[in-house]
Image 1 (cartoon, helix red, strand yellow):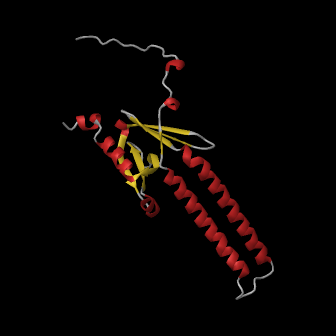
Image 2 (cartoon, rainbow, N blue to C red):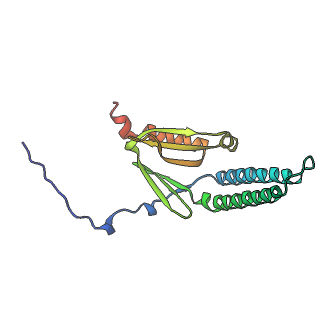
Image 3 (cartoon, rainbow, N blue to C red):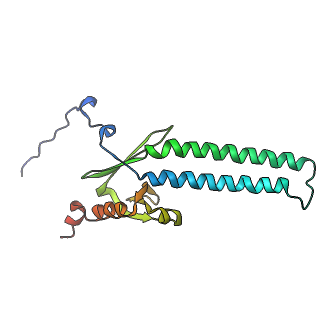
Length: 181
C-alpha cells in the first residue's frame, strides 16, 4: 500500500487569479434598444391613458380626482424615467465570458455582480425567448446548477444563434460526455 503525500501549502492572496481580469464579450446592443423601447412604451402608454382620463369630456371628475390623477401621471413618468436611465446605463455593462471550465457573467450599475458557474456543476441549461426577444432576434441563456431550483445565472440579450452555440458547447463539454463513454 502506497501512502499518498498530503500537501496543504499556503497560497498568498496576491497569487490568486482575479475574475475581473477575464476577457469578456458584451451582449447584443439590440437588448438595450429593446429595453428602452419597452420602458418608454409601457410607461408612456400608462401616462397617456391617465392624461386621457384627466381630459375626457364624458363625465366630470370629483374635485380631488384631477389632483390624484395628476400625481399618478407624475409618478408614472418619474418611475419610467428612472427605469429608462437605468437601462440606458446598465445594459451596456452586462458582459459574459465562456472559458474552458466555467461561464462568467458580469453585470450591475450600482452593485457589481460577478457570477462564475463551473460547467461541471451545471444541472441543465435553457434558452428562453419571449415574444419581444424573438422579434429582436435575441435569447436569454439560463443556467441551472445542481442542487437549486432557480437559475444560477441568466445571460440576457444574446443573439439566438450565439445562445444555441453556447448551449451546445456546455452540453458537449468533454468532462460531461467523458463519463458516458
